[in-house]
Length: 76
Image 1 (cartoon, helix red, strand yellow):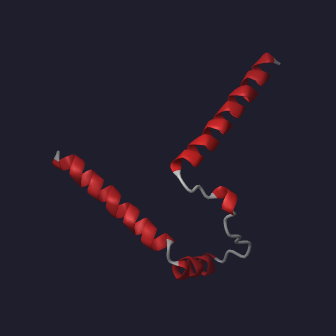
Image 2: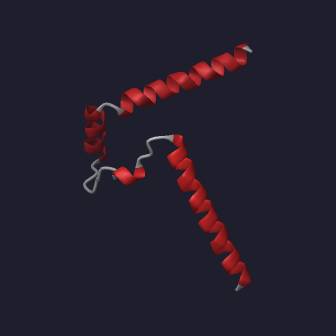
């Protein structure tokens, strides 16, 4: 049980660190300058998922399309 708790605490701490880092525009701007990204473009709103169900729906559609494509290739 302690091992599971430790793992969850580590995951929580990692998620918190990611959140704090990613929500700081200053850090992101500094990183972009350090890496010298001239062609940096912000992510479009269409690539941001507001909840897990939106992400899952898109993933399911992609999987269906991939399966259809694979079946089509196998027929040929």
